[in-house]
Image (cartoon, rainbow, N blue to C red):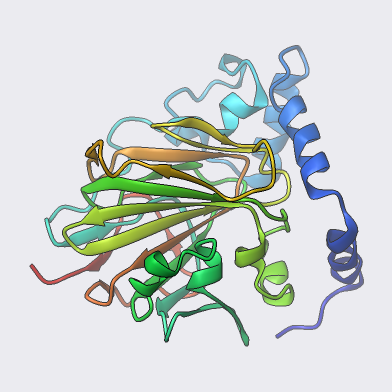
Amino acid sequence: MAELSKKQKFLKALFYVMPHHAVSRVVYFFTRLQGPQVAPMISWFINKYGVNMDEAEEPEVGYYQTFNEFFIRPLKSGIRPIAPGENTLACPCDGTVSQAGPIRAGAIMQAKGRGYSALELLGGDKTMAAEFADGNFATIYLAPYNYHRVHMPIDANMNRIIHVPGRLFSVAQWTVEEIPRLFARNERLACYFETAAGPMVMVLVGAINVAAIETVWSGLVTPPHGKKISEFDYSHTRKEISKGAEMGRFNMGSTVILLTGKNVEWLPHIAPGQTIKMGQLIGHFPT
């Protein structure tokens, strides 16, 4: 593991004492302001992070009334084809693979030498965690320039959502390597689905400046009211969501962790450091 720079050492110490939620609420406020400052802010962001606006449904900066509208911009129709096949999994989002592989006796790898348990990631739900004790996982980091909507890897029935309050540490690669159990400490939504591949969970992890997380069926879920774990039961509604359909979005960027049963196999390119696109083939399972 590379030695931290002085700036990173300072930021690491700062992250532990920083009022994460207060900072993120300020970001929430400013990214929803309208006015003449919006277009210059968006233009600066595009230039700084190299955002590819040719893919956007609306490429003109002046179209967006707020910075958040720009950040969660939809893409042009057909620009992210969905991997075909009934026994395949499509990538749920644009991003870079942070880690991927087997879940060993309930343990998930976070970074070199660091891990956390499926049990704590899922808010202490023992029944749910047991279903993935020997399954597989893939952690995908969404950079600022990425498309920030999250889609279904496979046809699924929505079963439950668990909202777990927590910190909002940065999810940059160096912080993931340095801060123990980061994904199990940050605020997150664990969305549990029933699929032809077996049980599947998509965990949407919050981070500093990620001022809100939404799902298409319940709207804005964070920022939360209160600090207790909340559960939403959809098991009796048969809420069916098609492969490739949007399921949620990050208002500012973060991380998606995908958990599957042991019968799912990732393709060889789903490995740390690999850039992937929403809809791309990432895995398969026996029919």
